[in-house]
Amino acid sequence: MNVKFHIEKLNFYFNKNQVLKDINIDIQSNKILGIIGPASSGKTTFLRALNRMNDLEFGSEMDGLILLDDKNIYDPGYDVVDLRRKVGMVFAMPVPLPMSIYDNVVYGPRISGASDKKHLDGLVEKSLKAAYLWEEVKDRLKTSAMRLSGGQQQRLCLARVLAMEPDVILLDEPCSGLDPISTAKIEDALTELKKEYTIVLVTNNTKQAARVSDSTAFFLMGELIEYGKTGQIFTAPAKAQTNEYITGRFG
Image 1 (cartoon, rainbow, N blue to C red):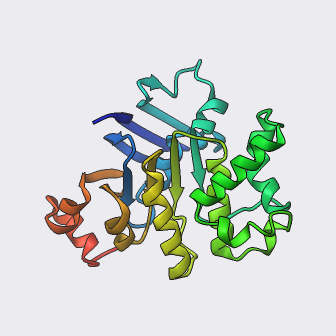
Image 2: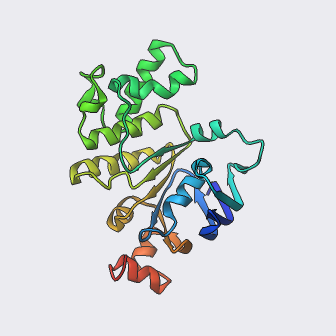
């Protein structure tokens, strides 16, 4: 099985405060990795380390190794702009740009130099279809994205990432503020998208992790407590802390 990310002895600090402790994990290509754990367990910091978003935070430091396709993404010569194109991110709160639905989707490609209208039109349709949004918006692509519902805005943000044609999609609690119908649409999209992309999903909803993830990692207080196939984690966890968390005894 192909390894997309290899993470070895990863430690992360903010202002000398250690928030990730000796993380070792391989993330498989074309699979969904669900990351679960209580608040302040290091889930989002780990996710942001995969495309160096933590670099933007003052006082951040890391040691250890993160390889993407066998290349060290923290090597001084690694192109961070290219990394963030390859490894796109969808945040908990949808942040559509104050422009049309169409212009939201093509914003990244245009900045990267794409200008052919036929190519951009095809990219918009492909991306919106992959995000399960096309049928709802295809007749109003020139209207403001700010008029979409919260669930639609989140799927638009996913389409915006897909338009950059990444290799990996990172999602930080993408359904935290959404209703069950919108959540189901995003979960359906992720299940299809893993055929073409590697997906890492941070979620506070253990049932969501159980539904869509191929493998699950349980973080607690900055440590990776357990990692394995989702079926095993949720039915026969090896660690007592994992069992206590997924059965709702804490968290």
